[in-house]
Length: 567
Image (cartoon, rainbow, N blue to C red):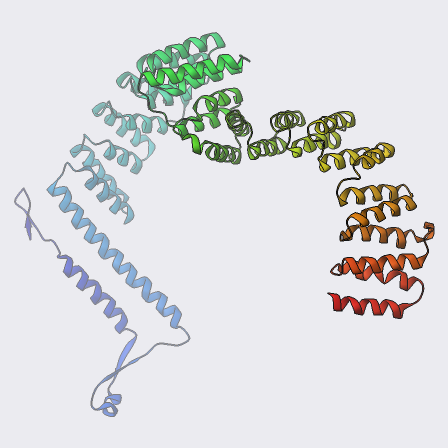
């Protein structure tokens, strides 16, 4: 038993008693499904056994009913216990707002909405300093009563922004919402949240500009207000607004970046945009504003995604090296470019690679990364520019010459430019077999067979691939005798090159009816191939074709059997 402040006594049920009571209820429920069988006790040494009387057919249904009844009993016990505990809280500390809110929610959960409203109304009188109590009271009451509750609440707590916003949300018409927010701003002129809510309700641009102009006067350190006002103004007025913002908030990078974006939107020169970013870095350093390298790169990506690639490139150019050791720059910048590209910031990735190549102009993998970027996300013109720059910086890297010539030929269908590129590649790579073969392929596939033949003749002192390609050209033009002569020369120099034997097989077998060489000579040629390239399985198989043609299958079988031995 406890004694309250007014002298009355109330009884409080001990928590241990509640637990025992709940256990008793559960035990009584279980006893309904069991009976004592005394007859079994005589067969068990005088002890009495309990036999469960549960219908096997309805076992699951009975079990479900048992669980629900015990859960219901537990809920009733829990609610009663919560009421007693929360009443004790309210009596002990009546100014504690969460106690009133919790008590009201317990009654609401129990389905007693009237009791919940009564408790929360009493809480509003006792805890008139708490906005949360008023918000809970408004939630539990119909809209008409909730409006009256908010009227009382904002009169008692005029500086609580949450109450005004909740009251505005309760209204249906825009005019009523605006009236509440105007009254709220009179009491809280420096609340950014209230200014934003009021501006969002304005449907006329001019009215929004007027509100924003007042907002930046009342809250000059709000970057969002300045940027919103600049966005609604004309170019000249926006410049003035941003200049005022820079004077009001000199240590905020966002205003400087917005100024750069504004100039870019007016097609300003890259130099002017870079000048703004440079000045931003200088002013921020003067005011000891700490901006990390990752924050700058994030700003660059945001500018890129918002349609300001030059602003993004300027930020990258002047901040990419911040805090990165010289020996780590190449790897770090390459990773930065890949990460930016994976997030869709193509211009940022391009700017990072451009800065990396200015720092490391002879790094082949950086040029290849830039080429892949332009191939995937750029235009044929931008890809050609990168390949031209790569060829200039790394003239001995034939891959860039070849890629550029291929793009000109296959993508832009500009054969003359491709021919000029390969001619320039010859000048710096006179001994490059790849360049010779690419030039011959270009002439060959564009119908300039004589030019291709001349190029092959110049390079026949090269490797086995040159001899094979030259023979294939003659084969395609039906010059079988010349092709065979070229193959003989090639085999004399490279007797172990199996592809030459396979090319000769194509002439001797597929074009045998046009070939003047007898079949016996072809069979002899296959034997040479098998002796020089015994591990070439294809050559063993093809060697049996002439035998099949002259109906000597038994000899072909011997050849196949011999191949097993060699293999």
